[in-house]
Amino acid sequence: MKLIELIKKIFLLGIQRKVVRAEDIGKAYTFVSDCYENTFLKEMHVYNDEVLNAFIEALPTDTKGLLDLACGTGYNSEVLARVYTQAQFYLVDISKGMLEEAKKKQMRTASFIQKDMLGFLKEQPDESLDGVICCWAIKYQPPRQIIKEVYRILKPGGIFGVLVNTKKTLPEIRKIYPSLLLKHPETIQRIMFNLPNPNNKLVFLKWFKKARFQVLRAEEGKRVFHFRNEEKLIEWVTHTGALAGFDCMLDLQNQEIKKSLEASLMKKRIHSVTHRFVWAILKK
Image (cartoon, rainbow, N blue to C red; front, side, top):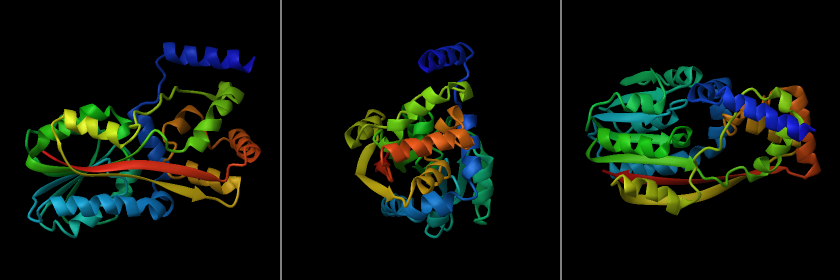
């Protein structure tokens, strides 16, 4: 009976075109913006640093214009500003809350723009920037379109640094998410389609090669997070942006849904989640 109810609800939402959009993703990140650095980046900043260090190796220090695409709390720009002291930084994010956190970094030469990635890129003139960095976000809009636009706005020899999750991220949560939908179909307000994360490094690099980027360096890796109990695990996945978009389809702050999630984790004895990712430094 619940399955029929779920199918009907998703069919109706599809007809009404009630799907998760970029603005919904932005709101999800605004919700976690004040704790993002102390939850997600507290553990994952080491991978941002890997990308940033490789980015710095590839781009001269006399760079004049840098774009932090989906900048989040401004972590990447703050690191790069210590090296590119004369550069003008453009920090772009659709999340108002994330931009407010980024502004607290008090960067001297920075512009903060609340806009979606493609919307911003399409407004920029050809060959106008020296470098673009984008961490954990390229999957929230069509990646190939973003890559094409970045190639267009980069100057010859410009550098693009990208870090993103692969499709194999959070398999533990993906395993039980359908059962949550089945148990609570009446709460679903929007449809969230699977994000276009790459399967692996090979697929990831094909995106850039097709756009004529030269691959300077590429790496992939994983991080397993272990938790004392189901409650701590739930707190992490709902306060890091890890499920941004999916938490718009199913309200993971709802106490009944949280109880169902906790029960599912307990039943399957899940006390850890796996975060898989890939990154690359590209040259135009």
